[in-house]
Length: 520
Image (cartoon, rainbow, N blue to C red; front, side):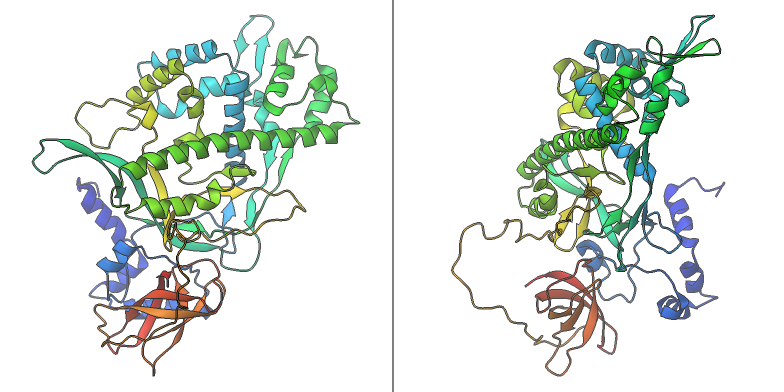
């Protein structure tokens, strides 16, 4: 590895460091035995259904095995079930509260001074650039009474430590994880063949890896709490807005910070009403989440509108719009956006800067300083455009739609949870916009041509058992209609539903695997 300087060679080497590659080695030749070991239930090997995207399916049509590349794993507990870290939940809430602080309480002139000061740093670090703003929003100050020195970045003075979130665990016994392809979608500037002019085109940038995803509709249980007792105990110690101890003042301006961040008045808090005040804080956190999410979903709609204008052949737009359907229809609900592919606008105070021309110009300087939005490897002059930032979105291909990731609907304990509808092109109203005459009922049909295992056909199938995975009867020939588990579709289907499936046959023309392709 020290001698190799080519990234592709290093990548190939990394891909070869795994048990399967070892078993494939010409001197070992144990890949079939290894596959049998993996597929034997008694060995307890963790597995998850996989949605093979169309490009990969065509590329490896007829192959006995389809390489997926590296898989971005989900965090799991000791039982192999997905675990949502409490820090991720708390981080999403913190971003929402930060956005609330910026839009409702921050002094614009002070925010601009802080950002300008950071821009003047000759060697700034991108990951630390926003820290002074974070300190201004969440931290109380301390002061040494002897020297008069004020410290505003003490971690112990971070008021958001009062918010507590447990890890989230999936409920139910069904398979909660599946594997899916994640690609990047954006509008790209391209050159004509003779390079005489440029044009914009909505494109898909293919990514090499798959990812483990928590299946849509999965219920995750977690607890959000607030340490109201800390404030109850601190309140009697306050004098002139701070706590004096050992020649120092601590928690300076805590009364103002509590009001700005948590929506309660410290002067009204008492041991007798602390539970009511805590409930008020939790309701305020929900309100902050809703405000940020609505701004983010509006930005998603604008991004999709721009994408659609440049997707002339509708290669992706209808599928993306259908995938966003369940989220767009809930923009007035209690939502949370978190995890991988949340995006710059879901993890920062971006919308605050884009809402004002002066602040937008300031953010443009930040983009230029850190090359935000620039194409990797671009050697030509880069002119940042805050109005089209972020330009790209990571979306996941699931069945017939392309969906966003990480959107969660929140329900309080005891509240009735509404079922999540399956995102499909037809359900989103993207096919058949006009009323049509009733058609004859769709029926499954047998395949009427010889089977070519090297170019396996798409076939009709009928769902015989709903579940995760679903089970289907595949209409190959009148004398051969095997029942098999359906790959590539994580949610239970309606029994009797007729679908089209992509098939895999072995050399003896025996059907060995089927994956969802479309509804018939």
